[in-house]
Image (cartoon, rainbow, N blue to C red):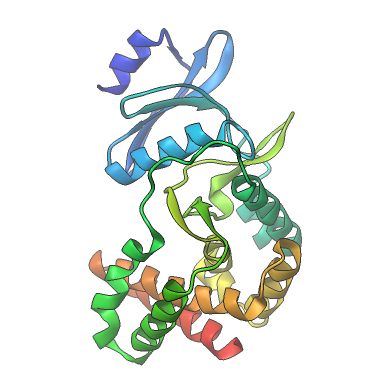
Length: 264
């Protein structure tokens, strides 16, 4: 069904400009007198993320009001204050603490069984394919193999936790949106935080060392293992960029991977 079909079916009133991303269609709406966001997934991965949002039941995440097929009607959160702007504006530590708090909301134990989600291992085939393209790729693939063979504290993961996917509710605080939906080691969910909010910021001298220490303390993680996941994930990101012919982005992601490996 299209966005227009869901607008009619669920009696929604458009309340802003529609947006299309590579994976979904988004339409701000009014539902039963309150602001909401209609999201219609256009990929299987995005629909799995919708399933995870339903399972989270608004605990640490935007509330889901209705769902069906590829669509999700959810709580519309505020875009300001913006965590990326906070981090880039000299308040990196504060932004990181907020991200760690949001991650804790996703990772908390829940009584119900999670939806059927792919294992983290399936994400790394692109890195396996890229390992012949240089020493950093090969090192990262070796690290990924070691980590994936010995995953710890396995649970449902957001899969894309970064500064743009944590927004604020005036009543309920900072909440996640747009998960990918995976099952894997909890530490993995923190790796993307250290590759954001921009590659240039991630590579600022001393930033990775400082923020990895802060995340390890806030989230109760082993810092060395966190850095290993950063090294593996950043190279995986580089492999994805190469698949899309994004050469400069791949170069920057590889630089983050190499830096993470050097700090372990």
